[in-house]
Length: 284
Image 1: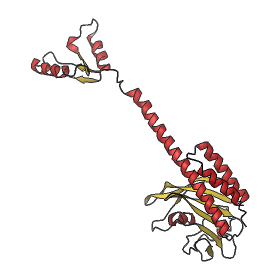
Image 2 (image 1 turned 180 degrees about the vertical axis):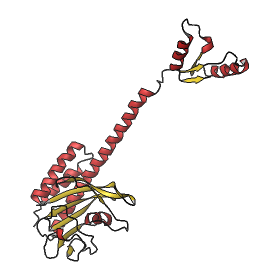
Image 3 (image 1 turned 60 degrees about the vertical axis):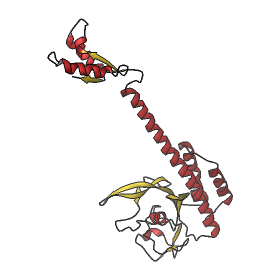
Image 4 (image 1 turned 120 degrees about the vertical axis):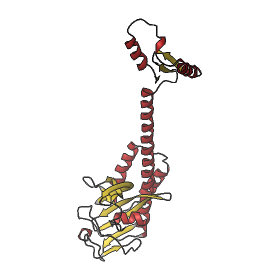
């Protein structure tokens, strides 16, 4: 049977309620504590947390998926497509998420679940008596006889699931269901706060990068924009006078350099190149 320390879960609940933000370091520490509790105290042979907001590529295009952000298993668990082309849940994990149901699944005779890769009436769901379960998918190396899946919810939002598997064939008591529900609720709050903190941090970094690029490529507000005005020697004086008159109306906003007014010694071509390179706008 599952050994549940209600005192530990109560303290974990209290701890989660004291938090208003969770950074990466704290989240890693929480992961170690919760995984140790799940595997050593509860006796789980497999434990993982999956979140929504991801997608997988299918023949029909990108489809919504749950992604494992944390697992006691070895190697990458990958993403799990939530439903197939017909709208059916692809696994019991996505069923718990999509239907917003807590599940406690065993074989009716206590056999290992891994042999039921197709939907089978031998599977029994003890929490809500669900009868339309999709096939079992093995993530615990074929050893599990009990699978417990709980949605992760914060407020009205469901955003993931917690998945526990056990070698033993376990039937739930009300105490066990209450304690696991409390564990999932407290963990959901911590994961939500961590994801919120991580998103805000990424947004802050993006904004900072935008500011950093802005002061490199954009003009200083302390400088006046320069306009380089060049005309042909055969230009109509009436036109050039209008141009100069309009530009003069923006005195203090633009600094106008008229190439025909250059009086410095040296190569005219070099002077023109330098003036063009140092100007913000050009009128020819």
